[in-house]
Length: 248
Image (tube, rainbow, N blue to C red; front, side):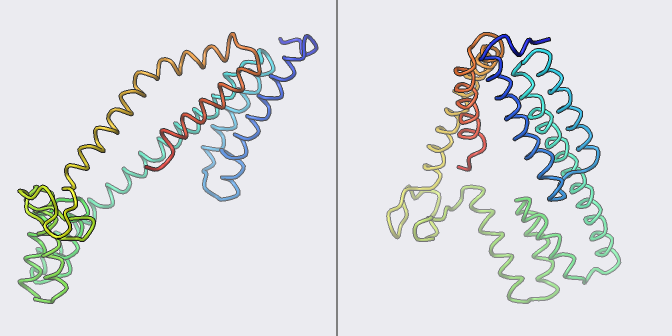
């Protein structure tokens, strides 16, 4: 058990941990309850983690206690995302089966072909999308169906590298054109390669920095004075938000 009268720095450490835990509890639990964006099991799990963090804080004044709720919140969100993706996938499969059944019973139902085409277009499977748009257009030669077909055909060519579209003037160019025929803008694929290299370099650096981050956390927890601990903790938070949570 920690002797809280033993020193001024112990009091500062206790205050710092309480403030961080309070902020975490507000954003991870209380605010989400108000917004009705959290389930009862999630409330129970996070509450247990906060209780465990408080016990750890009271016994050892360990800064590990401020990371426990954050880790729990991250894992819960990860589980929720996977669950939502699984539900979405099942609903999509069910709808695909329904559409295929409709086509078997009503071969001239062009709406079913359009919906299937839209589904595969969103999945960037343009060959399948073209197949269904073509069948729909054969049944009903509406101009808007033809437009969908043309867009899917163009996207397929772009994906396969047959053509590329200038972002500056929207001019269509062939794969042999290194610059836009209309405005001279550099070929998009060249820019994307440069951007990909930059992103790869960034995450390559982060991969090698991750052991250093873990080392800093252990130094914060075990050895460093409270003021330096606060500074490094805030620096670490900035690093996480800057590289992982800030949109490109």
